[in-house]
Length: 216
Image (cartoon, rainbow, N blue to C red; front, side, top):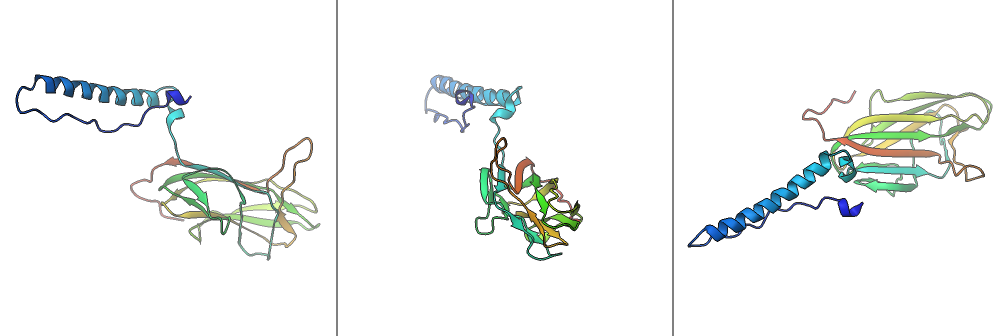
C-alpha cells in the first residue's frame, strides 16, 4: 500500500522575477504552480475517496494487563493497571504507575475498557468502576457490578467518550466491598490464548469543541 500513500505537501519554490522580459519567468511560474496544485488535488482526492480513511493517521492505543489485580482494602478506590502495550500513537501510559494513560493531542477520545473480575469466596460482592481524569474522579461516571458466589467471573465493560487536553491523563478506578475480589488473568491453555485481567483501547474522535463541556 505504501506506493499509494500521498506525499506531504510543501509550499512551492517560486522563481524570482527577472529584471527584464517576463515571458520565461511566467512560464516557469505556471509550471511550478500547476505541479503544486496537481499534488494538492491528488491528496484531496485520495482522502475524500472511497478508501480515504486508509491515509489518515489519528492517535490511538491498546494497553492490557497480564497480572492479577487484587483488592487491597474494601470500599476504597484503587487504579487499574496495564503492564503491556500493543499499540501507541500519540497516546502513552506512565511506566511508573502503569495506570495513567496520557494523550499527546487535545481532543475528544473514545475509551473502551474491559476487565475480568472474579470472586474468591462464597459471599456476593459489589464492585464499582469509574473514571478519573488528572487524578480527579469524574462525576456520575460510576458503574455497579455484582459477583455472585465463589469462583463467579463477570465481564466488566465500560465504553465512553471524554474530552482531553494535551498532557492530561485518564485512569480507571474500581472498588469492592469484599477483600476476596480480584481482576484475574489466565495463561494460554488449549484451545484458547491467554486472558488479560484488563484491556484499554483508546481512539481519537475529533478536535475539542469551542466551548468545553462542564464536568458533571
